[in-house]
Every structure is written in C-alpha cells, then in structure tokens.
Amino acid sequence: MTRADLVVTDIGELATLASGPVPRTGPAMRELGRLSRAAVAVDAGRFVYVGSEAACKREVRLRSGGSRWSAAGGTVVPGFVDPHTHVLFAGDRAAEIDLKIGGASYRDIVRRGGGLFQTVRATRRASTALLLRSAEARLRRMAAMGTTSCEVKSGYALTPAGERRLLSLVPILARRTGLRLVPTFLGAHAVPPEYTDRPDDYVSALLTDALPAVARHHLAGYCDAFCEPGFFSVEQTERLLLAARAAGLGLKIHADEFGRSGGAALAARLGCRSADHLLESSDEDRHALAAAGVTAVLLPLTPFASFAGRSSPGREMVDAGVPVAVGTDLSPNSWVESMPVVLSHSVYAARLTPAEALTAATVNAAHAIGLAGEAGTIAVGRPADFVAFDVPSSEQIPYRFGLTPERVYRRGICVSPARERPP
Ligand code: ZN
Image (cartoon, rainbow, N blue to C red):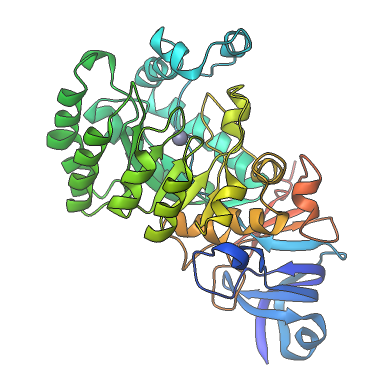
C-alpha cells in the first residue's frame, strides 16, 4: 500500500508527458502520455502514484490529515515551465503602444533612447526593495496561471555591479515565491550608453569584469546575448559565449529576431542549449539547429506585441525536427505573464498543434533551462508540480483564449487559488 498526503481523483484527462527521450522532436511532440479516468497521489512533495483511478483506490491510502481533491472530470497537465523571461525590471512602457501603432519598431524606439534604455534607467535607479517587490508580484501572477518553474534573465542594468545585483535577487525571489527559478546572465542585452559606438569595449568589460564575477559567485546557470544588428554581432556574441562556456555556464542566444543575422547558425555551431526568437530563421538555419539538437525557444507574443506582422515559425521548426519550447518573453516590451495565453498563440499564430504546444510549454521548456529531470512531466518520483483546468481535454487549454487554471499545485501544495487568510 502506498501512503500519500494528497490524492487527486476524477481526472478526465491526465497528460503526463512522461515517456520518450527529452527533448521531444517531430511526431514525438504530439505524444502526451495521456490517461483518462486517472488519479495522482503525492507524498512529501513528490508523485507516488500516477495511473488509473480504479487502481489508485486499491493501491493508495491517504495519511491522516492528508487531503483529497476531485478534479471533477477536468484536465491535469504538468506545471508550466517558462524558459525565457526578463521579469526583473522597474517601470513600464505602456506609453510606447502609441509609438508602435504609429509604425515605430523596437529598434527605432531604442535608437531614440527609449524602449530598453528607458527600462535600464528605471532599473538602475530602483531600490532593491522595489525590484524585489515588483518582480515578486509578477512571479505570483505567473504562478496563478500555472507556471511552476521559470527562467529569469538579468539585462536591465548593463553595468557589472548592476547585473550582479539583479542576479543576486533570483534566489531571494525563489524563496519568497516557491517557484523554481533559473538565472541567466544577459549582460549583453544591449550596448549601454556609456559604451555607445564601442561595443567591442563593452564586450571586453563583460569578459574581464562581469562574467568572471557571475561565474565565481554562481549567480547564473546560463549566459545569453542579444545577437542582432545594432546590438551584438556574431563575432562579439561568439567571443562572449566561448568565455562563458569556459567559465562553466550554459549558452543561449537571442537570435534572428529582427533580421537573419547569423545567430541561429552560431547557436548550432556552438551547440547552445537554446536559440530564442528565430523569427527570421531560414530552412538552412532550422536544419542546422535540428542537427545540433539546439532547442528553439519561440516567443509567439513578442511579434504580436511589437506589431511585427509576423509569426513565430513553430510549424516550420517542428517539421524540420528542431526541439521546440515556448515562453512568455515577459518584459516591458511584451508584458505576458500567462502561459495559457502563450499556448493559444503557439497554436493560432505559430501553428503548433495543441499537443505540440503543451510539449513545448512543459517538458521541452524544462530541457531548455536545464530542468528536464525536475520539471515538465508527471511521473512517480518527480516533484508534484501540476495544473488542473476545468476543461475535458488538453486541446481545450489553447483553444479557449485566456483560460484560467482551476488549481495549481507546487510540490503537492495547492498554491492557487491561495488559501484564504483568516480575517
Ligand atoms: Zn528576450
């Protein structure tokens, strides 16, 4: 008899995502490991039973004081993993919407000293207490929408000390929110005003000052760079990432978002963990990513929020055999906190099937940030992070725009809806 402190019964569809190699590619991205009339049981934060409801009744005994919840025929999926966020920032840029509607691109706004540089000024000025408070509020809203693990990039300080300050907040935010957070060093988000027209000097400063400190103090698991015209060239990106790899960090690239600048090809050549955005990538790039096993992290709300008139190449990536993950790209440019909204856009804009989108938001997203062993699947022995929706099947999560979870469990504790506090 298996003992459990939580049993969830009457699950109409349980998508476990638990079988097959990780990351998933091609047709395997549509295999969700579905069970119907299912139940799960949890003890001390980990799944101890995943299977049919009938066998659960025979095999699992609830501990005294344990809890039982009926999903009432709804759907249960793994907790979402958001593999690309810029959640650590101050201020907002709602005022840019009118500029964007007037035809200004992300790069136009940055060139005028606004956009990202406005956020850099606000973030540099912000107190640590304010940064923590605002990022914590965003993370809590993300958690209420089903995110249980996510990546957190630095990149809005663009000074060695400022970037270290941002990264040092990540473990504090993880403790405060209970989310599993993976920090990424994005000192090469843009060339800061102090180095205007001297990007090589800024890369040198990152190599000699910021990066060694990040590595020495274990402030980040990954190093990322914004490899785009007007930001960092392929050569500058390669110089930084080779040093990051030598320092023990995993590698990521913001690649081929505004133009086909060679970021995807570089990611394939270096064997990066992921190449992100990839709006302008070509067939050749996709084949190179597939051959190198680099995960494409697609951010389908970003072109939408930028009025770019284009869509993430989800269908093309899956058909080329590239492992695909999806994320929010939460930032002041594309303020997206909801992974269910990302799932809808992954389907309706990037043309992933609902099953592929769910794979991209769970098991493949976990792989993209190095959490494949801990997140993104529902299996005995794994941390019990899962989300229940009041819909009869998992296709309906992206199908219904703006769907809200019924319940979110993290390590077997119901974190949303939050337990009401006594008056
Ligand atoms: Zn980004």
